[in-house]
Figure (tube, rainbow, N blue to C red):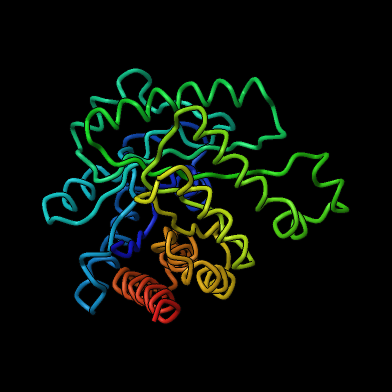
Length: 298
């Protein structure tokens, strides 16, 4: 499979609330401000392409709310584009545009429509059922139209699960989450949810990457792939996750966001560096992540 290097900046509240301190619904002026800051990330992406990142594998994950111009520019330039359809910051998956989701997908024509879903198989059973019903319908809609489906899976810890590991989220990630990821993928597959790519939280052991990959491709799903997401972790942590996943054939790359641009945008917004400096640093961070992946795959 062709490698996939997604620069992810489809975050919404991370930009408006966390970066700029905007409370509530942004004003039109604030929307333009967020959109302009997102364009700094896009400028970094474009610089990385100029500096040698393989265009065939490079891609963007950006939202419609603040990234409309970026998304249209990317499609016009033939750049692989993924766009989210979920409402931002919700514990339970809901469509951003309700029943109109299809119109927005057809308007922007992304390479992949992406969902972010929080699902723990030992969690709220009713919420899991509701999400699964929506996701099965969405999966069917995309398949019927020959459209790509990118599934970002988060498996947040339940309190009882944390108690089992002494309250340690590090132990949860190492000891419990890998099996929960496998079980979640199995449950969703059994329910008819069929992504083309699973976007998986980083795993600390190669054998866990292998287990996840085996389930993702179970039942003849040989064309299904996985990518590693960054969780906003530091560079060294993300590179460790890439090192575990890269030798596993079903894993084809990454979709990393805040790790590559958060500190640079904080410095830019705080007038500590110029716009060009921020874009150049983001380009270098993205290029370095691509090189880390490539080094692990030979």
